[in-house]
Amino acid sequence: DALEIALRVAGIRAGDKVLTTPLSAFATTLAILRAGGTPVFVDVNESGLLDLELAERRLEAKDIRFILPVHLFGHAHDLQALAAMSQKHGAILIEDCAQSILAKSRGALTGSVGLLSATSFYPTKNLGCLGDGGALLTNDEQLAQHAKALRDYGQSSKYLHDRLGLNSRLDELQAAFLISAQLPRLEDWTARRISIAAEYSAGLKGSRFTLPPVPEGSQSVWHLFPILVDSNRDGFLQHLKASGIGGGVHYPHLIPHQDALRGVASETSGSLEKATRFAQFEVSLPIHPFMSVADVERVLETCLAWRG
Ligand SMILES: *Cc1c(COP(=O)(O)O)cnc(C)c1O
Image (cartoon, rainbow, N blue to C red; front, top):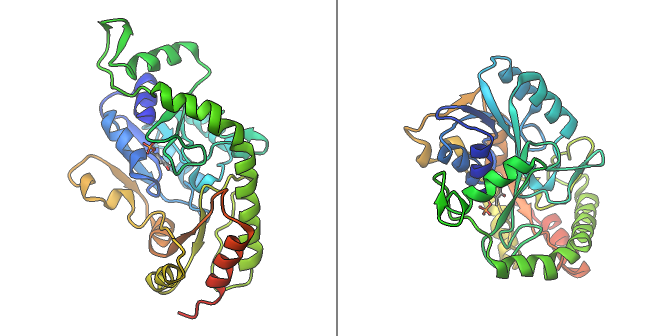
């Protein structure tokens, strides 16, 4: 909802083209479609994030109105590059920060360069509440007022509806829980995620698994820890499961290939070769702040013991 509202307050019109990634939660593209936009999918890079060079090339056609990148896995895109690209091509930048809260690119926080940025408080995110929730970030007061009206049935003041809005309020209980219980712990939790990622990276170095590189300049917050298992991924997931370890896949189906997009206006620019590689071979190892040292060691040992 935050992404949909962001696109709407930024002035999206029916059929406007929105450049985005095929490798994300379906929600990213769903927001574009619900706002009336046409998604334009561009392949990802080795890290699994939107390939900014390919994006730049597609932007040359001058028909793209919005860029909606995702700081996937908790890795920060190069924010300077995003800002420069948005300026050069007159395309409005909206950042999907659902996985990247506190992630930085060369010292700057994700969510700080988009005209608007959205994040999610779904319980599995780095900063989660007890149910569904999210937030929209902007430093433009007018856009903020507009967004506040849209999240509340489009009412600008009580019982006065200027626009067709949504019911996307964050309820007080969730807000209180986030502010009092969760937010004060976010930095420590993030530090723990970073340290687990460092242990995984060191432990899997030189192994049969491919570790996708972290984007240059990214201080990642490791929402997920992706590895590529180039053969028999299902066997590997089974092997983890047999040891009581839950592996994930992010994401098994590319968004443009989902049935819901059949017959819906969208464009795929070039091949989606690298995104397809993630869809076929990616496995997300368990990573969360409550894992003990022993848990992390056991995951590593189990990975290294795989002979499939
Ligand atoms: C989780 C997620 C969303 C959707 O967030 P919800 O709060 O579940 O609607 C959008 N984009 C990305 C990248 C996500 O990981």
